[in-house]
Image 1 (cartoon, rainbow, N blue to C red):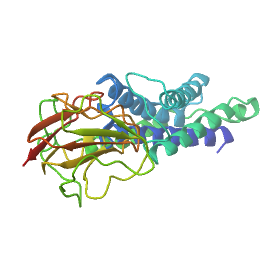
Image 2: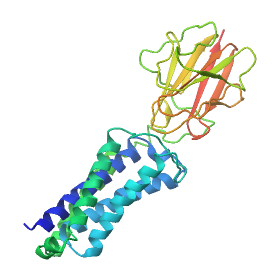
Image 3: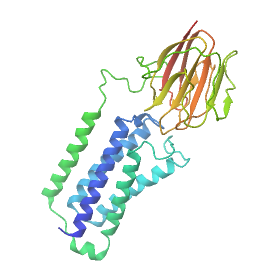
Image 4: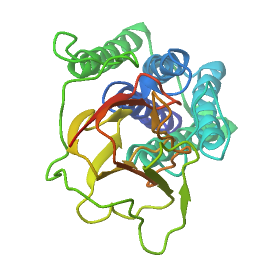
Length: 303
């Protein structure tokens, strides 16, 4: 096997792996609900499909435009990642760091491998040794890529009969609670030691809210709500009056916690940031993430 064919095959495998990672983001990490819906989700699915197609063609064909397309896809994906993870927004989406981990790191690695390997095939000495394979090989490579892509889509596709994927802001998903979390009465707001707290300007009279930057754990005894995979992991909970609820953003993108009645509002929470609010008034408090309004929850406070 020629060096050129080895490099093209390695690039095809790397690009296909990148496509699989994007499928995982779309289905398992709920990134189809990120940014400007549904356009950002469509861009992720397009990347996965384009990766499968280009991977199949790279295995069988050596034409310069096929290799250039592979470089363009991999380099473009790297560029979009760098752009959206450095304080910029693409299709309504932005994030920080190498999240979600380890998928982001692996995707970047295989894309870099693809760009370097395909660029090397343009060296005349390598290109002259390489030959294109026939249509049977192209068909076989396409079949393999299609089976991988379609198989994973079928496997990861949510069961619509049991799963609500994007509830409207007025609806709340079936109640689930964070493992080990309990409702505890706390006589007032609490803040994490060593962190600067910012009072909420819209907290209701007699109630307090704080936003805490950083990754500190909630104060002992506080009710915890994890924000993960574009949802509030305990979307419907009941607590005693005086309880402090602490929301922690475990996603790699920003979220917020905003009461429907304006009684509490957080700033945009980066990864690891927390927001807490003490509920001193009975009632039912619906809230959403203003950045992603389909993320909804309800806190019921009893005396």
